[in-house]
Length: 244
Length: 228
Image 1 (cartoon, rainbow over the protein chains, first blue to last red):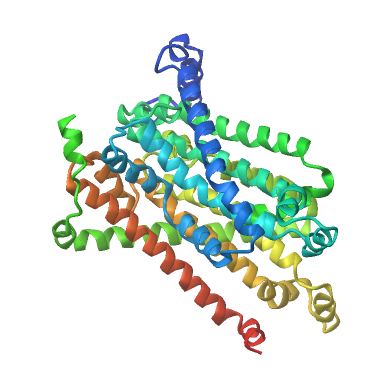
Image 2: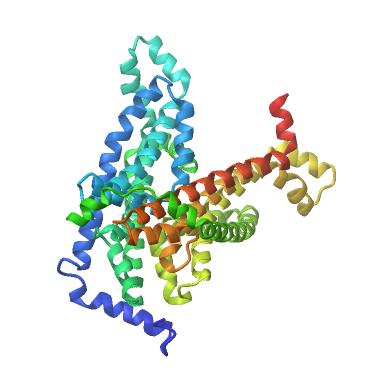
């Protein structure tokens, strides 16, 4: 232990500050800026790809009221599989597919993690739209497609946005583990710090990873409140309890 | 590249499983103990904080904000924060694991108790229940289904997170996943990853079902209602 050997917590935090103050730790391929870029890049790519894969089928199935039991089963099983295990499992799978180490096993694991909650929350959002509204729309002569596009989708949009935010934060968190399968990102500092027993680097890495997750959560939450009409905002909160 | 190509033929080795049953059992028990301690401590802390939040309404916001921040911090980072302070120890693992249970438990405890009908509370008061009696004899039992729903989510989440503590020298079944990662190019490595994952999922499902059973036994009135 670095702290156990003579100098206390204050000195340790001083070392962490010195680490951040050192310009060498910011630049180059293994610098903070590049690691941050890698982390944000894979988070954005995996979140966007998951949304594209999960949301359209969920909209359609919920519109047709198909597969409700299946949805519940997916949530429960998804929660039981440790994300650490998923990241590690995708390493041999990615190699078997000829995609190698690093980006692809991390990306596929993130996809695998993010698709189920996005699917189920979108489903729950559409299925939770007031049936009277749907009926009234039909009574006004809307076709099934119009009901979905002009009534169910807008009404469910707060829930869908909340689902994307929750998934994005979870993806950013799990992307940290990508450092274990050869990917960069901010997790690199923690994993490399563990390997070299450099507690200063470990702690600095933790500050960066935690900071990114919190900034992402706050930014997306702010965006959501700006976009979603206040009258619909309580719906998003009610679904989040299901997510957590 | 040839090494990587051979990895593509990673088989599952039943021989390894048969030869390591003791090991697997020991790690499973370790996994359960880490989880049980974390969830129990989490319930005690959450109960305390929920009582404060219910008594002094203004504290609910700050409490959920703080536990929400803890919940948002990625697990590896939270453990990494603690390692310089508490070392590669069980204490580090448990502090991290407990932190993740708080938000879920407090939210469900407060929602459960707030969900008790006003009429029921008034009747209990009319029958002469004091604050303390009302809480333990009326509100808490009626809130149990919602509270246990929270405990189920907390327990299943914790079982998953325990595997991450392998990186700080603990880990239960996560030990196999981490060792498998270091040997991933061999069938024995893949086998260990799969064993660690599958047993941990089975554990999560078993604990979840056990809690459902406990709920049924602890709330006989709701079961009667369901069959009526």
